[in-house]
Length: 239
Length: 376
Image 1 (cartoon, rainbow over the protein chains, first blue to last red):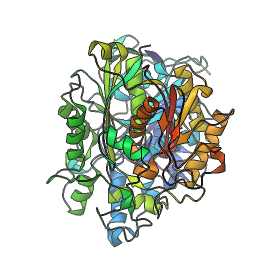
Image 2 (cartoon, rainbow over the protein chains, first blue to last red):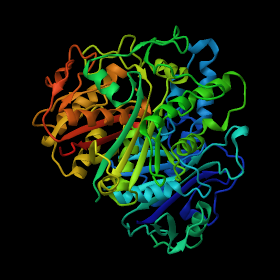
Image 3 (cartoon, helix red, strand yellow):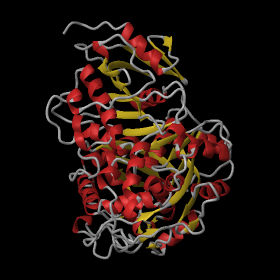
Image 4 (tube, one colour):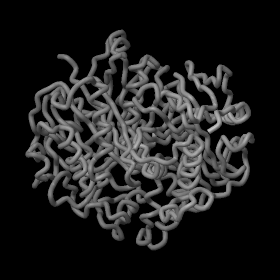
């Protein structure tokens, strides 16, 4: 199973970014700043203010990834899928929703917050903004290397007619009692595509053999190493 | 491509334990939607849901714990090298709610990783497992992924485990969204007013045909096709033209290498909300331009079991193909005209080898499975 990595975008404690504009690997622990609308979209966007924080960072990372790949703008819907791995999912939104439920025994329960108590809702937000009609799901699996979404994304590509899949991670900082040392707060997506769009080039080829990932034939140990190798060695045609 | 068969199904629903209780209750047209006693509902638009009998949380545990025991006892042994795919939208939401209301720290068990590991341990599986969260299409997509793993030769067997329980957290949310029906829900009825929630656990063991034959396990049905697509329209409302559902169904038909005329019946999502049911009928009328096959939904009996809904409906569909009959759609007294007379309160005879199961959910997701009758 092989695919080209054609875009990378993120929101992490290092800030917001996209692969073609930097060589610094952005996945790191630390405090996460939730991006403002202006940092992501140049135009006024009424929907953005209604999103929960998980959706904001996930949507932002998807946006930067598609922008990096040169396919943010669209006229017709396209069958691109999204696979996002998350350890904590929408736990923070669950807590915020519960705070509206407990007082007055449910009378003040917030419908807007409840709508985001399913972590896949931000995938719907990304899908409608960018016309993405492929499969979309959140996955939870024990994985210290943060590679599960990439493996699942490659399988999705191979098993379906989708020409591309956005695969990545999304997590807010968890409640202190649940936090782990290897947490990577933020969101980062890679666009995996079956075929090359030659005008933009790619970062290289990602391959899944058995349960092991290889980037340009080198074994991938974890997501940070993969992204570092993508950013370090990138060479793109002049546009 | 390896053929994918369903070997074992275990289920626990408000109709009782086991597939036979489920099937017989549905064929008899029973509804188990009743006033809730789990929590006070006076501030919500409905007091109704379909709860499982005798499902109490152990001290410090979740109601999912006894559900797991009951499912594991029913299902029996699973090969230890079987990958595990879990489909749950809210996991141990009762533990989350209890801890938070008591001002206690959140336990690790509220994380899906913990839940999945607990299920893997109970079945003695080496695979740590993965939870798939795609709202009400979660278990449909889990079955699709399991089928793909087997079809591509990456696994000989896959265990799909789907479970969601009733909670005030979820109940209040659907109430706040004005999505709950104040009366027992009426899928595909002209006077439908919304959905009722339910709860269920379903475990389905999928195998390659070769593996099943080697282990001398009978096949209940085959998973012949699968597909999933996003509406790219709205986060909580379905696309009125059914564009995502049409794409998902077409992908499933293509994978099964059949045309829509070969579908003997449809097990629809049929939540009982105004927009979902209208969207589904629009999509099915486009897909089945030559005329709808018999169509039904089970949520008038069992409520909407969220992440477990799709797996539950696959269990019903396997029985329907074997018996060549679909249960009636409880609550559908005055079917929508767009149902072309193919939706009925009464059980209907069907004739054919393929049945289409569909689910749609928040986030704009749609998923479809084509089940194939096992040769007699």
